[in-house]
Amino acid sequence: MTQLPLAQKAVGWFFQPVALGRVAAMRFLAGAFIWVDWWWYMPWILGHRHVPGELYQPLFIARVFPVFPVPDYWIVVGTLVVLLAASIPMMFDKAPRLFGWIVAIAYFEWMIIAMSYGKVDHGKFGFLLLLFLLPTMPKARWGDRKTLSEHVGWGFNLVQIGVVCTYFFAAWAKFRYGGFEWVNSATMTWAILRRGTEFSNWLLDYPMLLRLSQWGMVGFELLSPIVMFAAAKRLKYGIVAFFYLFHLTVFLAVEISFLPHMVAMACFLPLERIHPRELIRKAPELPGLVRRKLKARKAIPAQRTPDETAREPEPTS
Image 1 (cartoon, rainbow, N blue to C red):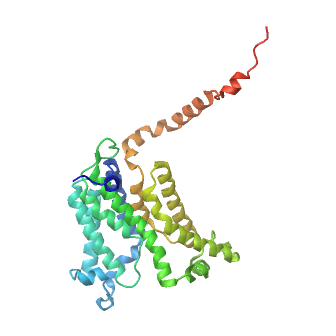
Image 2: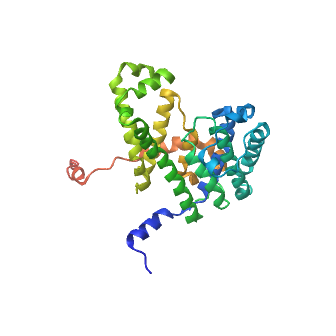
Image 3: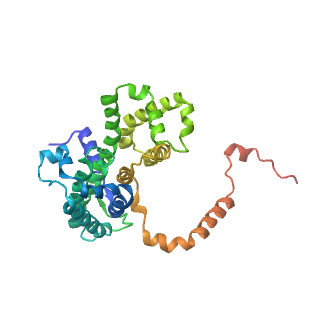
């Protein structure tokens, strides 16, 4: 039975081959972030080793699958030790499937420990998807642009869908819990009063601008699925660059960071072009290479149109 054209296009889009070099880069980024997460981004999670078990309110998934023990000192510390120990070989692509699964399961437990006492972050969804999909991908090496894999394309497409869903359903949650008052009230004013910085405090004098930013934020989140269907690579990379710029702006304004989300979002980018050894080897040559390229550009004469060539005066005898 032959597939319909639409089904063929959908399969071709979902299983578009991706170079294995991107897998190596994403494994390194994911493992590096785990260390950043423990040491700097969310160091308070380790403090839950001293929290009484009576205050533990497990998340929905932990209630549905009651295999997660009530955190105590040894469970919290042990989970962190296993997570950090397994992330190192995963970063450097040593037995990536084995250590990848250990990292994914340990980090999932780490998030259960973190989010079962009140606040739940939605910015970790894409990163969790990334951790659970990386172990399904083959062993890879940096800079490998020749070896393509449809399975890798499928995995990164799932991560990208998770990244986009984080935006889209954030807008849905705003309307679900706040209604249109979220965009028509003083939401950003309240946020800046609580967490404002030197880059955003001046905006308190312009409440209409803050209200427009609320509409712009929701509009951006609702339109974020466009990035999944952008055919032109430059357009897609431009949209992803806008996503990163958006998060930088939010951090500068109210010091809210989506660092794990931005790590997961890197799978949109052609990281297979990066080869650390080549970069280190060519680093001393980089200034000279830039100068040579600039000189070559200046040496190229400006191209003339056919009309300008025709109007060129003949030399006098």
